[in-house]
View (cartoon, rainbow, N blue to C red):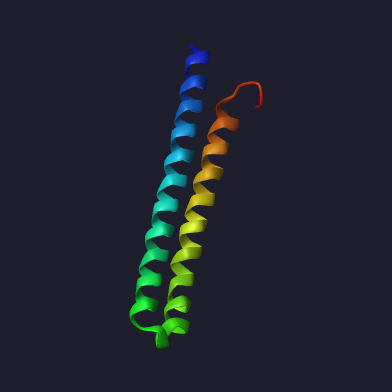
Length: 83
């Protein structure tokens, strides 16, 4: 019974970390594509566009890092050998 719980904890942590990384990657890619398209349409506003892109980019990175930490905590706290 305990082995099943640990196995499901590992599976859930792996799925959660993977989905968070994929979601962050897709979000950053779409953000960069939109910024590149906007600069291509209006090159004179490149500094303003890149400034407006930075905050959401940092937030996306932060969400991905937090998701990885949560997945690591699930693995570490559900393993009876570690606690």
